[in-house]
Amino acid sequence: MSIQTRALVAIVSVAAVLAVGSGSTAVAAGPAEARGPAGAGNPLPGDGVLDYRRTRVTVEEHGVERRDGAVIRDISYSAGGGPAVRAYLVEPDRSGHAHAWAAVLYLHWFEPGNPTSSRLEFLEEAVTLAPRGTVSLLPDLTFPWNGDPVGDSTDLRAVVDQTIQARRGLDLLQDRRDVDGRRIGVVGHDYGGMYGLMVATVDRDRVRTAVAVNVDATFSNWFLQFWLGFEGQAATAYQRLLEPVDPIRYVPFGPRGGTLFQFSVPDFFIPDSTARALFSAASEPKDQRLYPGAAHELDDPRARADRAAWLAQRLALAGP
Image 1: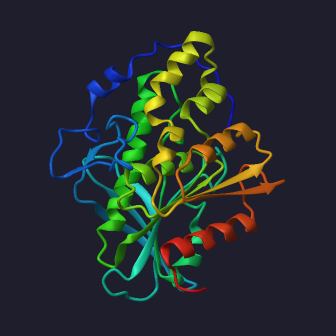
Image 2: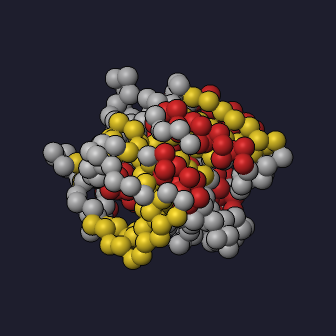
């Protein structure tokens, strides 16, 4: 993450943001609308800000590679009139009967200039899981990768749209005849992990488990610290603006199969207090793994092994 400066801009209310709307935003309730279920009788956070109308996902294939028992498809997909999303779709290199495979949605981290700040980050992990009966989708994320936070309602809209884009990735996986809809997981790192925590909550009826790697509790924290530099009332107003998409408000309603949190220790970007607060707020079942001396990137064989073991148990994967 690079430190950038921007002029102060006006902060508008959440209500004004929701009134603007777009093709991928909430619509009137109907049979095709995708909503998250309430947990234990409690309404989910966000007041429906992440709702969207589910439509058919169109997939275009650009290339294919076979190796190590996996088929790696270079694809783009789109739905709901939104822009095409470039992604890797990784499958077992053998045919499967109906509902044969588990599925994982992988959401990458943010680090400008690093090739792994893209759909490449978890590719090798997806290839490793494919022979064990797993279909994986690894989309390229867009915010803040393709545009900086600007300090107003545009940022809330961008977070919402990115989350809905990830939910449409779940649509793609769930619509496959060979995927078992009861065995779907979400794995994310950094911003990808923050989006993943929200997806795993609002889609807890179809996400069995989640893994969150070096995640922050709020979007406003890093936006303020590394881009905007707001202070005082301006910072407080911005924090309130983004409250509907604060991951820490979603983790108390996490997936029924549990959430694994992975944190580097120490991590410049995530204070210990933030990690503790997230884990404490998360619903059961849950687990936390700490990796002393590992960088925020967490390119660590111990972390990869722990993720694989967690997914294997929760998604009932075949042995290696």
